[in-house]
Length: 419
Length: 151
Image (cartoon, rainbow over all chains, first blue to last red; front, side, top):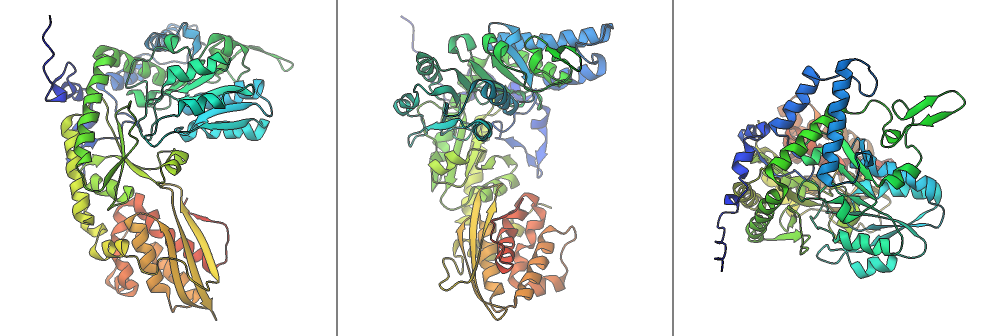
């Protein structure tokens, strides 16, 4: 019989050493208003480790030329590094094939690509797309644009008071007219982890393909695309400790093969005459123009970095941190946590009775604490909870209990001013 | 230099907690809606304008301390002013919170209680909070009906 594991008093003292990981992030040594930076806005964009910064610098210093074009050695090396990043991404997400990984600018472009290519080619007036009340504007507006072009109908799966998707209501929305489900894996605004496997299973049972917005999931948990079996998966590199301006659209090969190009230009063609153009194979068919070469290679470095640390350990660390922060913040007078799902990512959205989120943000900023305030590009969700805005602290792999404690102390300062 | 006390002066806190002229204005003959897309804050300004003079002003809406205090102070200040004077005060106020140079003693005297908002200059992301009510007032005076946006 094995002894029970000892209770962990200090959540930072587990397998994963956040204090050591912090050393990899030069920006965390800088000051904000003369105070040590407490960065609690990784859900908006994560900071970059030395390994990513160096990888990007290395591209421009030693390995840069345009890709898929030159016959010279330097171009071939850059091409190999770029394609290596694609293979790393495939392995990271456990996708079947590297050609199912399309490099785009970010999740926003990935979703727009599906809306404009898949949506315009295969959806028609009266067809339905099911979204959820949790969605970021980037998984709402592209579908509205498509709706205005084609007459498709958008249906919205509701959330309960905890911010969890109501699965029964969702299931009822799936009908003979449903052609696509587009739902987030993790809510950026309130941290809900959605029952995405069940969402996909229910849709597939009706033959409906599913696009998953994975922006907030990929940095915080191991994502296995073959296990999920979703049809499309989108995420941004900058939230994964990689460069901004690079992101990924995963699409099952059968969909990507059938879809028309999204943008026309170089690299996406096989041959061009003024009469006719033959398009390149996937994924290149969707990668018109010179891409963010250093960004893709930097994303590959970020993936290497995270694989080295271990996503399971990062997730355990962040979950412990979320619990600690939730307990500390719950003691703050007049604080209401918005989003209390049973399964949450390390995102804490809250309001204070005494102060508006923007005032909270400004006062915390004075203490060197960076949080996000506002509607988090999820206004329909804010409306659902009858708030115009919230303050949001989000924790990344480099955050510690000290950061959460600094936040709680900072909120006391807010109450002093508005007390 | 970043000093929160410059921003959250007592008069600001006071007006944000107990806004003056808050609510609907019976008999109003001018109104406009203001919206700050950055934070989602909305407010409505209602006026009674007679013979070119702002007889009464009120506002309604939810916002941060800066936008609420600014709206409260504004409705206090513009009552009794001519339309042209109110518009001039808007421009003066806008200048106060967006200019690079600190305000002079004369500026502050002229702006009376509004001078309390001079500290917003140091917080570029909060300038729109301070000017939302004023943009809305200006639209109401001009009878522009489309909601005013700060962006």
